[in-house]
Image (cartoon, rainbow, N blue to C red):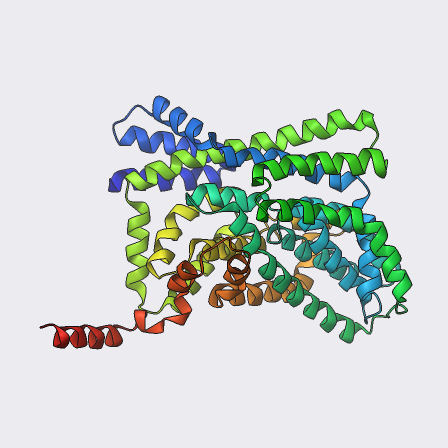
Length: 464
């Protein structure tokens, strides 16, 4: 089995270095690893890929992708920008706060960081440029703030993680991401405030209560989608997959009928884009399912788990190591394959520490969001630079404080379980007893060998 693992890793890394598409790299690495194991790879790879995409939960992904495309082109970003402007536009550097808050709102509706960068950034970056804000700062704000939409539900990557993890509730993941998404947005706003103080950016006039109510009225139908999707799932009215289909119907109604921002002649192109994106995601999921199976057969998760648990007795150190590894992975691997590949590797480790799978899922997603803003595979960074008409080299220095904000938020999410688990418990998506049992930071004695030895000795003394 050691030879199988070696071939799997070497072929995969070699193909990535050769710039072979990630899905093809995964499938070919799996093919040669199964061949080395003595099985028929043509049958096994095909079977595992078919089983990997044969999941009812995955039906939600194309619906949410289509909904995101409709939202992105349906004029909803502009209404959210106006609403956010009445709330935070009066602060020094107010447009940066407006940008961040709008990305959070739009990302939570569309479930796509890339759509948030292009839709919100397409208006906010030129507007901030016109008001005298630094161009690279504007791109940095948009690029990092857009990733909060992957934490605030609904989110396609949470569905992918739920499938990869096995038996994790999608509704629980949706609820778990709300507070971490807000925390990340708050830290980004702190950096915006620091830049505004240093650069002495102007502030807009404070909006009246009437203006706030009026702008909320314009954005209310857009914001209602969050209530419909999340409220319907929590109320047991429909599943996450059914909620995705309802999101498509609602976003179509708003974009085509109410706002009339999308002409009917554009719908075939939107459907084609949705089909292409869905095909890419499903190919990644299918290929990664085969890789996960052969990794299990080669005992790779068990080997990594033993190595990490042998590294230290302190869960803080182990989780810090995992986060550092994931940050490194995120710089060269897209989020979806990273979740599919590393969930079966690291989930057994953190569960051995007593970490709840939902908590780990949010930590994993928050970590990989950083990779969306870093070269060479930073999707949001490339889109942001394209919209802002600048280069990655110029933006990098300005991005560093925002990276610091995202890492600070990641540490809060990692080491404070309540950040992810409090809301799912309150909404009864998770049982309180299960969460308390797995809230590892609350039970330091479980990871203190001296305390464990003392406890064992006490138990022995009490034995009749």
